[in-house]
Image 1: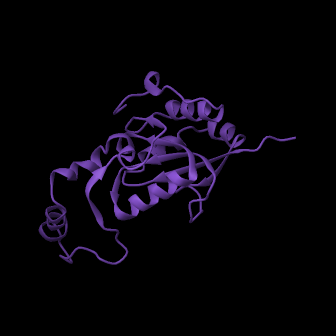
Image 2: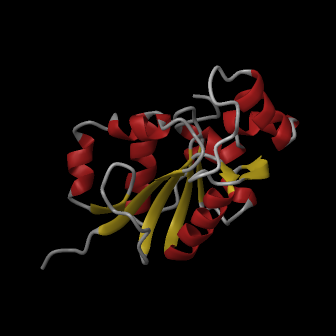
Length: 179
């Protein structure tokens, strides 16, 4: 009788995708993980809607738009163990650099002062910015913090294998902020 696979999701909010690239750096260990997990949602697969009953979700990026806010709240409702994946998710990191400025100042700089064409901010299909970029734990409960910019593949592997085995990992020995 085969054991049911762990349902794994990865999510990309406001970040650079470096954490997902580091996840891919697991290389042949991805095959080992594939024996134990089913990736049910990710920018790396074609699922369009975040499913219910997800066991583990790795969340890359900070919460900076209305869309991010709604998405992370839904993800938290549907996930047993939520991992803040990388420094942007853990601290806000680079996306939070805009917190020193008002949204109007940011939009003016990007779309009026520095634009060479079309000096108007986009309006169609662009989510509204939140007044302040926030790390994931300021919005929803986070179960595991995996810092790093991006976290090394070895640290990701350690966290995932510990979670798959039912243990909450101590990440302090395998990673730190910015490493």
